[in-house]
Image 1 (cartoon, rainbow, N blue to C red):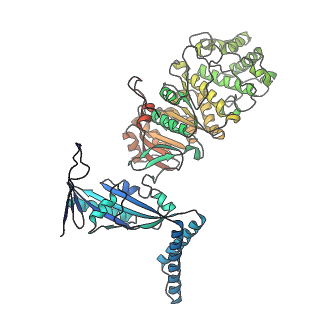
Image 2 (cartoon, rainbow, N blue to C red; image 1 turned 90 degrees about the vertical axis):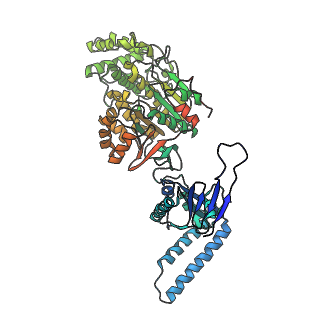
Length: 606
């Protein structure tokens, strides 16, 4: 056995780690590199066709395996000439066999067909030709472990229809070819077209990936990237379900931040003030509902608007799905005033915690008509620029109504008109935010107003989304959606928004930690069904059975979600699913992380 011993001296500089190993001992079939052993293989045989991410099994191998891909482009003129020669040889051989009465060789037939297709693609400029070499280097602690590990790798290659040949008597060249030096010392190359080379990209996932969209993270093995374009799906909605602390808001903020890079406009309903840092970092607008002096008037109209903005909710119809009571007067015959009146019906139902009975609904409708008429607002669009009535004007109109049901309704609205909860409604709207990111914070609203605040912000967002003059791709994030789903009227509004968002180039993201509230009602199930993108993060044992039944989880998926770490979960799109782990840069992590005080968190510039 011949042997070459090469000593690489340590560098003279004071470094904690040397640049390379102490020594490299060359054997015919292996190398002893420092304290370990390695053996290299050159792939000489490939399958006829490869799918997207076909190198992923090699990259995901549990042992230490170096995978090197060497690529050399072939000039178009030279590639065309070589293909013509190859095709001529194959055709002449096929015709010679036919003249002698021999049976056609299937391998020759397939090779000729492939050569013709590639030549046609080159002629049309659809394809290019590349010379590609694939080199594998297996590492182990000693020779015995190396033999066992090499057997596993060769078996893996055989399952992928790859012919891996050991670099016998060329061990040093094989090892050098797998180092990040860009040197192919073995020279075992194969012609690849553009599609096959693109499928060989090491980070291409064989599961869920897209050429455009947002990077969510890496696959469970850590070797593939999960990219997903929700705007390329049948609808643009998504749901994120997870227990508290599983990273659902972190993932929502990460998706929002990366969507901003693509020019997508973002609007957020934030019950816990978790998106403030994101808004401040990217220069977005921040609306702090519940703060002193911040008010929202549900009677506001968009002056001069007949369609789109200013409607009472998705679908341009009653968000409650039924008739509000008596017919409106002539002043409310049609247009945005009617839609505002219908939205006020929804808001009052949320404030009262229940839908009013028919008598109260009729009295409420008369009060809304009277409030608008007292403000001088009619069906004439020119009157829509006048100051809108307030909730106090509605209460006054109900008090003036002789119907006992109207007076009872006014008394029930008293806390929101003159009582402890009046701060949100006791004046005209104080802010009309605009920009690439708008965050509505509801943290300082009392619990009795959280659902109403969520509904008001969704309504304000919907006015922008449904405005045909300002149509663009938008993303609406409703965090802690269980607050709205707990109220039937709010759930119906959210359901209609989920169904109508796609028509206006918008996507709805529903984020909640209480899966039972979302999946325990037909409306919640409909919201999930209208979401083409569904993300499940770590789940509690108490809810896993409901989720498993609703999403058809396997036993392995159930176990994965129960034991998933923070930020790990399943991304599902129809029957396709992939386990992934959210991945963020240090700058993104500082922006998206929750629970760290601003004094301790220095947000880097993006």
